[in-house]
Length: 323
Image 1 (cartoon, helix red, strand yellow):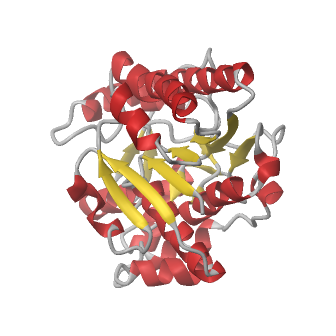
Image 2 (cartoon, helix red, strand yellow):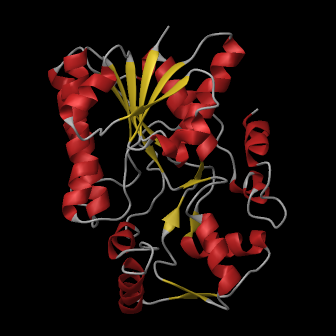
């Protein structure tokens, strides 16, 4: 019986992955042993009802605690990521943690590591987010190359959508309040991938030995501009608004203002820089089809959570779509 550790498991993708693994274990008639690390146990309340899922309160950035979390585990999935922050914050989350994870996994005898990165990463990319994600990948790849006992799989998703996303839901809420949507980066291209497909992709990598040593691009079947996605969110939510694309200097000013908005950034200058790189599959790496998955189109999911009166019973709908 495999013991799995999940880092970042109380977040949007983590919750979907826990549900997927629990259902797959139940369907196979096998017990699940899934340890979810969290800074605060209260963050994982929704997961406690899932059979086989246990919460472990710990600081994953502490070497001793991380090694302790890995004791007795056969595999670890790293979902920890941030979208906003300083250079030091990006370095800690996207580079420092993978470095610690590689060392702790080897110390604890854990062979299998699945790391979720992002499309568009590159050491020369225009944003701190994409550059730090690339350095994190490089740290893990170097550790795997230096240690024959460490089997690594990388996943690079596009922007992820689903009932609890902070992407389409945000644009739907904004259009409920504003008569027009001034939009920086309106022409940026995305290939949105459903959170259920990402969860299934991670589960497939854990299940299939042939995925070891490979990198997979996780993208949906369609490419949209940001303006098209904002328009879709407004229409589905029942209050479409005109989208006003902003030229470069005005887009930068908007991002600056939103970066320092009360309650946390809605967008940052670093996000705007990230959008200079198309968030679409390169076609040079295997994708969801190589994992036996058919990417789910946006239109099959968004009505279940964006349309008025459709926001209840989301978990049941999510499971129905998953089957």
